[in-house]
Length: 125
Image (cartoon, rainbow, N blue to C red; front, side, top):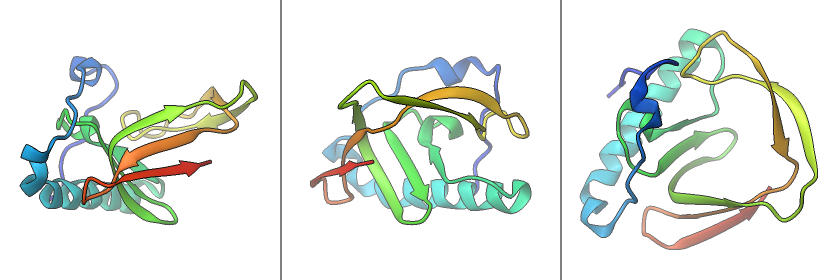
């Protein structure tokens, strides 16, 4: 089901998110479907969108759904930065559509998360 995306200025965007636990297992498929539907709806309307974090839809759980080029639900993701090399780019966000902002990002990151079976995964980007 498509959810509304919280927009810049909404205080709820600053609310901490809770870890996903085994007690949430039965909700994961529905949450994934809602995030996918919301992302694909945004992409149809705005021509952009690679990933969406659950808190952007008012679900304050540590979840990110990505569909670009692979499709993945990142459960309890964490980032590690193996070095300090950075780059700058103009980036956008679904919470402030149509606005691009110059940001600085780490050039390399290690992404760790759990998959839908709560198995640990890791990716060097």
